[in-house]
Amino acid sequence: TILVEEGYTVNHLCYSSPSGDKILIGTSGSEPTVLTRDGQHVVQFVRGDMYVMDMSRTSGHVDAVTDVSWHPLER
Image (cartoon, rainbow, N blue to C red; front, top):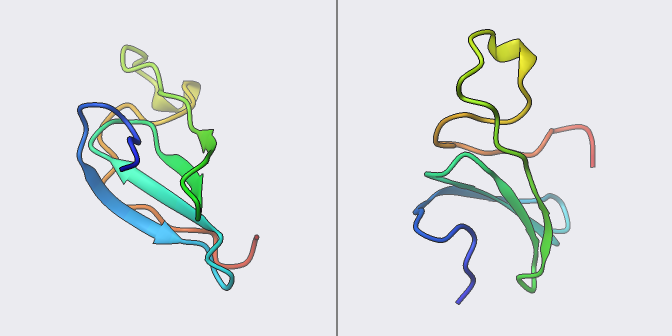
């Protein structure tokens, strides 16, 4: 069992292509996570500041992540 974010459900996951060595996971939390194929954490993205009125001034998501995907050209 791999715990991505405690208390949050997994909404979507996407394998990297073409090798599939990494998994990008979006949960009902606001911090998407990248894991290796073996379940080791690579990176967990930052949570944005939900109290900032101008969303271009914060980094990260402030609400649930409903879908994830890898960039089609960058690896």
